Amino acid sequence: MRNSMIQRVAAVLVCALAFTFWAPQKADAQDAFSCIEELSDDEVSYRIRYIEDKLQDGKKHATRWRYTWMSLWLAGGAGMTYAAVKNARDGDQADKFGWAYLAAGSYFMATTHMILPAPDVWGAKRIRRQDDGSEEARRAKLLYATQTLQKANGVQSLTAGALPVVGGLVYGVVGGTIKATQWTGHTRGLTAAMYIGPVVLGGLQTATAPNEAVKAYEAYRGIACSSKYYDTHEEGPEFDFSVSPGGTNLSVRF
Image (cartoon, rainbow, N blue to C red):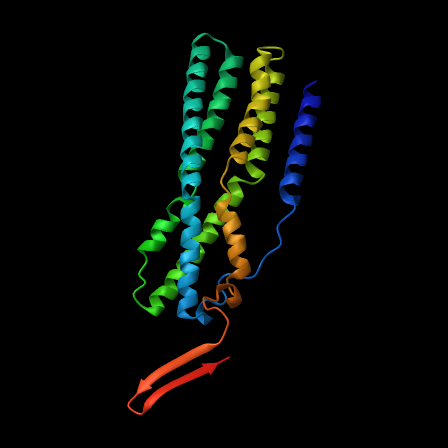
């Protein structure tokens, strides 16, 4: 029986790892940094505004999601810690283990929200604070803005990707299997919660995760070095009208 459960855990781990590493990856767009030194001052300013606006648009969702889930994990961990302590006092080792195991997972998830960088939350504000008093300063500001958007993309790709779900699946299977093999038939409801709870909550967290920065960075990489997407002048004839003591002059260039 125990060997069968161990084999089941091993099979789940192998499948989870395979899914994580072999999941389809997005094709790379062009480099967003290579042409910064070649851009005109107008193009630099346009790109800074683009990145700043995109991060500002996604700030509310990113902030609400991060602090809501951090609070839920902390509250859940506190409740499960109470249950673990209560069962320890009652001498129920099986339930003490189950609740303590789930509490540890909740605290771990809350901690990830605390320590994971949040460029999607503070990015727009910090970009605005950068010096832009000269052309060189604006070029440096664009570099900083691009790096900030890239970091926000990395964070959101992680939180909205497969890893939280796969991690919850593995954590639940390991904990549930330990409890099921060590205390066979004891509080099956809690055992089932240990199997199902982590992956379901991980899935809900992933499903509600922000991905605005991911979309913004993909779009920006596609146009970062393509001046035609940032042409602020309409095509058409140019008129030049001047007045001098000798008369007036009107010229048209196509």
